[in-house]
Image (cartoon, rainbow, N blue to C red; front, top):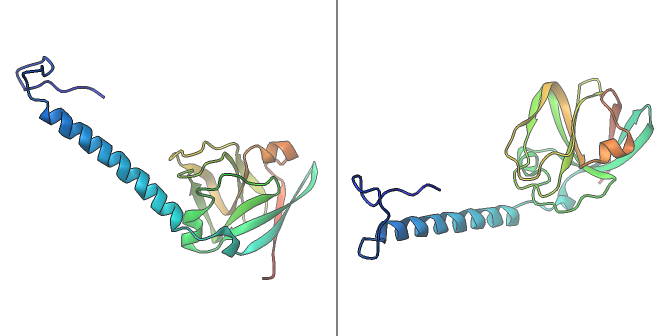
Length: 179
């Protein structure tokens, strides 16, 4: 953070005889802003829906390295899609979250309030993986885009796609679990 001069004509820092009030106010404002951001983050976490209430599905990915099964939560409403895997601190190797769209479109994700790296698999209308964003950076606000129209995004634990040999072109099928 750069420091402002004590006055427009004085480029020396305020001394013992000078006024420290502007600096105290700036420090107080910065402290309050940090506290407010922390409280807002904590409030967001407390208002989230428990993942146990999300619909579930079994998902299979088939490719050259075999067939891999995952138990996934389905983000089937705008609020569930906005929540995603925010604040989740652990994700089992066979678990994930599926985001679906009825009409193909370019889908974009981010990692806000996401504590673990994720693999994001972007899936076209034909069920084929068209892009894998591997080990995305936790808490990043960078946009992670499918780059082309897709109907699904599957989020898995970071590194899981590489560990299982899942690749672009592999086929994805989801089976909705009965409640």
